[in-house]
Length: 406
Image (tube, rainbow, N blue to C red; front, top):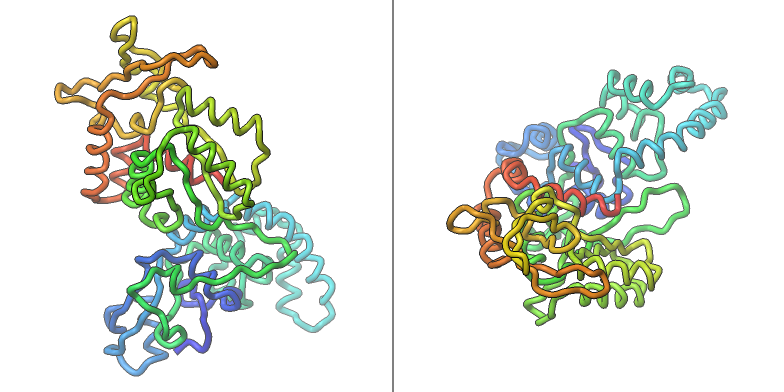
C-alpha cells in the first residue's frame, strides 16, 4: 500500500501535494471521481500500482481518479490559468538558476549539468525540452524537474500542461479509512488552507452566483450540470423557492451590498439581465459602492440572436436590437426553445417606459415555455460536448461566468 497520502500523476507520486492532501483532493477531484472496485477492474494505472501494495486482484480498492485534462480544467476555474502559471514561471526561473549556482560546489554533478542545460532558456525553449524528456525525467527529482514552485498547485498545473499525463489519482483504501462514499467529496475532505506569505496563485474556491430569480438559477445550474458536469460542485446558487425569496434586479443589488458589508470571503458573481433594469442596477453598484475583490458584478453578454429580435410595442411587430433593453437569460436557450408552435420566435413585448434611460423595458412572451423546453433538454442529458454544440449561446455565457475571476 502507499505509505502516505500521495497524489499520483500517472504512476508517479507528486510528492509536493502529500503535505496538503485534503486540499489537493478538493482541487483535483469531483464527487463522481470516487471508485470502489476489485483491483482486477480498477483503472490500468491504479491496477498496476495496487498489485504492488495488496495481495491479489480480488482485493477491493477505493480511490479517486480523474483524467488529467479534467483536473486541469478544474484548476483553470480555480484560477490556475495558463497565463498565471506562465507568469509565475517567469518570476521564479531566474531565482531557480541562481539557487543552482549557489550549490555548484556541493558535489551534485547531475544537478550541475541540468542547471547548465537550463541556463538562458526562454519559457518556450524550457517547455519544449521538458516535454521531450518526459514525465519520468521530471519525477526523478520530485516536482517539476529541478524546479519547484512554492505554490504546489501551480507545479501540478504546469506539469499537466508540459508533460501531458493521462491521469491524476490517489488511493483511499488504507490511507483514508473513514471516507464515506455516501457523502460528498467536500464533506469528506473539507480542510483549511494554510496561511503563507510566499508566492501563491490564490484559488477562487466555490463561487456563489446571484441571479435575478428562480428561473435564471434553474437554467444556469441545470446547464452547468449537463454541459460541464466536472464543474457542477464548484458553483452555488441562492435557493429562491426554499426560502421564498422574491426576485428582481434590485434584489441582486441588495444582496451584493449585504455580502460586501459583512466582508464575505466567498467569491460571488452578481449576474444581471442585459436589460434596462439590469444595467441600471449594475450602474448603481458601480457608482455607489467599492466592492471587494471577492465580488464581481456583470450583466448578461450581448447575444447574436438579440441583434434583430421580433418585438411587440406601440409600433406593432418589428425586429430590433434588444441587447441592453430586453436581453434576459431566455435568449441564451436556443432557437428551438424560443420558437412557438408555428416555428416563429416568440416576440418580446415592450411593457414599461424607463424614464432614467429613456428606453422601454421588455419581456419575452410565454418565457416559461422557453425555459421548460431548455430544462427538459438538460434533464434528458446526453453527451456534454454535443449539448455544448447544440446550445452555443448558453455555452458562451457559461464561459463568461467561468472566467469571471480568471
